[in-house]
Every structure is written in C-alpha cells, then in structure tokens.
Amino acid sequence: MKSVLWIVVFLLGVVVGGGIVLVARPTTEAEAPPASDAAILAADADVPVPLSGVLVSVTNDTGEALKNVEVHYAGGSFYTDTLSPAESFSNRINPTGESALEVAFADQSGGEVCSEVDAQLSPGGSGSLRLSIQPGGKLQVKEETTAAK
Image 1: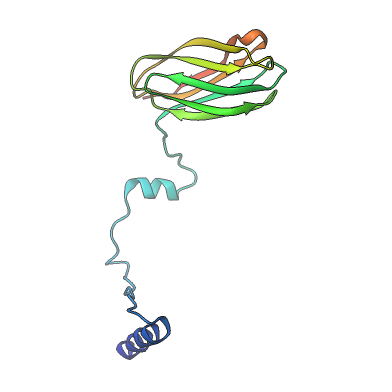
Image 2: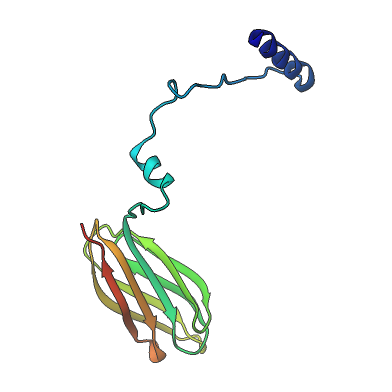
C-alpha cells in the first residue's frame, strides 16, 4: 500500500509540476545520522556554546554624533557610518597577531581623531572589551573580561 501512495505522489508531481519530483523517504530513528556534539549543545538552551574571539563594543560618550567610526586591530577592522551620542556598536574579532586597538572617527567639525588603547589582544583569545569614546577623543576601557581557557 505504501508503494502505491509513493507512485501516486510521484505522478501528481510530474503532472502538476511538469517535471521530475524527488521525494525523500522518511528515515527511522535507527537510520538517522548521529547528532554532533555542537548540535547537542546548541539544542540544550541551558548549556552555553563557547564563542571564539573577543567581543569589542564601542560607545560614544562624547555628547555629539561621530562619523566614520573605525576600529582597527591586527588582521582586520570594523566600521559604522555614524554613531549617535550614547549609542554603541560591536563586533566579535579574531586578531591574527599581538595587537592593540585603534579607534578612528570624524567629529562634528569634520576633524579626524585617532586614539589607541593597549588591550593586549592576541590570537586565539576570547572574552569581551567595552570601550568608551570620551570628549576630546580619548578612549577609555570600561570593562575587560577574558574567558577561561
């Protein structure tokens, strides 16, 4: 009886769709491939899946809008067109070498400002780094955490 049902489904697909229909046969639990460790961890909401890299967050505490905000580190950079007062943007980075962070932006007057913070970033590191752009373009580390290895 199952064979007849599959033939009917196939023929309907050919007639209605005007072409070949590929139908996958349902698998039983015994035939299903084993789930990977990552899939098992991701399926369990109580178990966090570790993320690699450092989450860098930059907040505009200058009181004025900033333009063309760029964060540079060994091996890359990330960017936003504008950063309003009290607004933040972030990105997870994976430096390719020992690195400090450099933040460059244009202020309201159009002047370019570049500040650096020695954050001791290294390849394979993980954790988070929250930076604040202060009035006058100074860069302040608000919080730095390193994940245990």
